[in-house]
Length: 69
Image 1 (cartoon, rainbow, N blue to C red):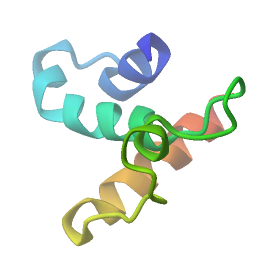
Image 2: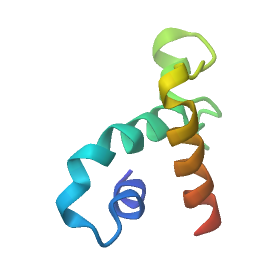
Image 3: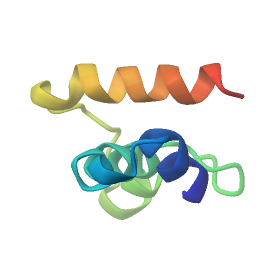
Image 4: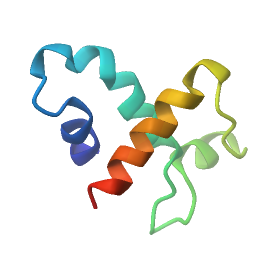
């Protein structure tokens, strides 16, 4: 989770709060190695469905995170 936050905020420390919700959502929907499920799936027993207003920002965040690996 710390890595997601760092990569999301980057050098722009002033705008961290506006990007935090995207980082938290990305963490909640990312499948974990130990459980092979996302925290969202474990809590709600459902597959993740993106809210329409978050679809593009989350996709861009995931692309950014995967590109940096």
